[in-house]
Image (cartoon, rainbow, N blue to C red; front, side, top):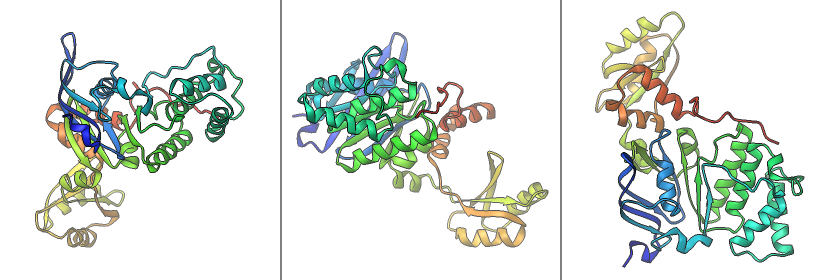
Length: 339
């Protein structure tokens, strides 16, 4: 009997390994995506996220390990129940937008006719492309093509929606639009999994996250579980201008402060085990003239850096990694403004 027989999990992977020649892309991956969840598959560029998604979609096949997709051994057996937005954006460039989406709907089992035509037209209006029905896809910007491809992924109302780097190449306004559409799909009861190397996107959206680094899973849990497990008990403080160095030295001597570390130029006081953070905050305010004192809640970026810290050999490398996790990497596509 397959694990997914009860259909409590939309995706399950056990001991999955995938290589490309001498390169190990994914190693020993165990992964579970519960039905109805909104799960982020996160990690820096090159971590193995896209390879994992392509194995889920039966584009690549694992060298070893077992998989279950919607209770079947392969996505091929459930293809009409899956919506997929690949990392490589691709539309039929010579086809007009409306006919292209009608064609994609028919491929996913929708009946051709007025109802499908109206559904496509409604979706185009929702993403701001209501006047693009008769435009060839090649006439659209990359961001507009991405919206069209998102529509093709959700048009048939799939049970499982898989999005590979869906926010890449979109300006902030359209990132917000796509975020709202993804949340809408989730509220409709669909299982959503999306990959991203930008931790903020995952924090905004996800019930749970699965973090991959160098092809291996390094974290798996709900946002609440992850924050609780990785909370160091830190207090962020910003001494007033001109008194930063002296302020840090003073805070290091306070009762209840184990040490002070700098993160992106901002000091964080690590509170000793058992100490009340609020009491330490009051002590800092009494001892140092500060612009701000606040409890630090660990972000996914903080958690990831903590996990991979041993493999990061220099501060420059750490800064590059942080930039990548914020979407500031030069490897990213430049965001473009789309209508």
